[in-house]
Length: 355
Image (cartoon, rainbow, N blue to C red; front, side, top):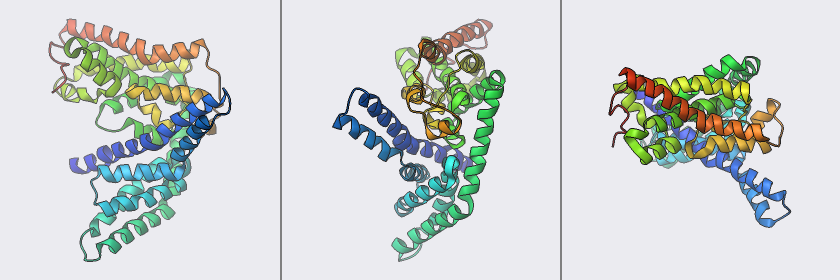
């Protein structure tokens, strides 16, 4: 069971997230940058940036990138991996708003079908692509639309519930997505599969930042600047070995996310209307913050479906972004951890990153 959980939920989802980063995410950033520069005047370089971004964010390209990422993470044979380009492209387009989840499910199944026959015959170069592509195409025709609609509907429900009950849902989403980010699963892939944007996306960003910045600041005594950067700009997953040894060290960032989630949704009404994958990234390479900023000027297709429109950010928008993503997570986690250190729940060396 552990083998399959790792292969399908951890490895495959992580590969899918990397595929999204290498296509939709970077493409959106490049395109938005070019569009903002074009406001200064027409320029071939600025137009090139927009076109480059459009190439990378094409649904066919995004689907292919996700599928290849999934196959690579699953360590499939080269012929199977290359065939997943067509499978992922078809699944993402056919899945519509819930395309990422359709790509995840169908790519895994097609990869396993192809792996069953890979290198088993003397005409492998024909048999393996034949089985992989046909199985992926059949699954796409039969299932992609259903999977996509189910994922989109569930994501819409979360977005709607957050709009209706921003305080409670702000807490729930912030904690759940933040915890997922620290666990060895992909919070980014989850957010992408469900299309979390708007206030729900903002709460997800808050929760991820609470984990990353929280652990980075509260462990500064043990890990100094290298730990601050590796956790704050890298991943809080580095603390998982320590969490297993002493789960109490997880309390400060989780409590911080309980607070920053509602602060984001109710006080600052912070929305993440960029690419949904950014909602699950936190401060990793500042992708979460770039997603929020991108969403202000050029909302993603998923965000537009929920009524998002371009806005000109004001002081409160920028203040909310800085407070929710950086200042509050660090301050709150440090205060909570100080109390737990005093109570003896967190001891010297509990937060030292493994070498």
